[in-house]
Length: 424
Picture 1: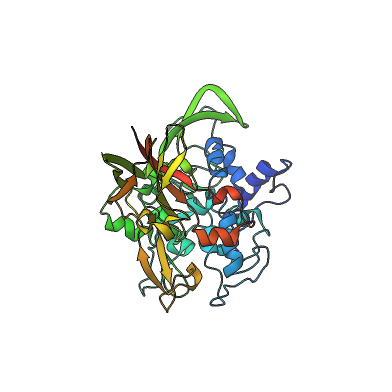
Picture 2: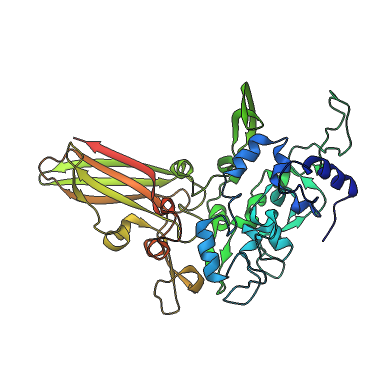
């Protein structure tokens, strides 16, 4: 393991000894052992955003859904020497979900705080260059393998290179600002582009070579030039914090390190637009629903079990449901209203991601796609409202059934992504 320079170690000793933190017993031996709490001292607002993010909770110890899948395809995340059951190789999942552990080729995620911290500050800010999502030989480069990684210095997009030396109090530019760890700020081309994301979010195939996630390809096919950060790390102005308390009247503008995605209900609503038109024709109400994907990638994207479905229903003035477009689920009763990726086995039957050898169908909304659905709704006496709802799910119905009791019920509930209604 590479060792940090002695001047960094001594500084960390001053920072952490006696603080009661996870680092009070010993100083870190590698920059990748540095706890996010070290960064919190100067970047408290960003730390709080990160702390509640899926990046901070990416490991199999903290993400219930990923944890359930990891245990199924690999094994116990608290055991050393775990390998993938399909090919007996080191779990590739860790290269994205627990990069510090993957760098050390370890699988016991509770062995160090850095292993269970998921994608921490250092995980991304130690990247110095993007190598691409494939090697010259066409081999996938996933997670940390897609980057040149600096073991001794951090990097950022500011254009400012900091000093580890003490600077006089009140010093102003051009005197360099002090930073505990060496930090080079000359990586704007990396940190302000999709490259910083694509190591993990470009694509992911299973052991059979079946693509499970292809967000990068979806983005390129859309021919869009907006960066991932525009949506997922937009600049936000938040109250200034000091030791967890808001400083009245003070704010700070930062790139939002919540990096919200499919787990965040507000983020989900940004991607979908919906309109509804109706025409009463005797005993029938003809409804035309239009749904549009506003994103430069598929909706949904990422994990192949993410999906959304549309509920169309008629109500009376008191909200009593008079009619609905499905009884059990649109996948079964109204397939045009279900948007999902169907994975199949060699026989052409739907199967789970680890066993899939092909994609049978993809009914998700493609980048920037607009799709229309039409319904003939019985014009029952008392019908006063026609309402359509797009409901986003992290899991497909069979997975919900299999994982019931193993993950929090909250993750089973669909999120409202968009809605439209007509009242008579």
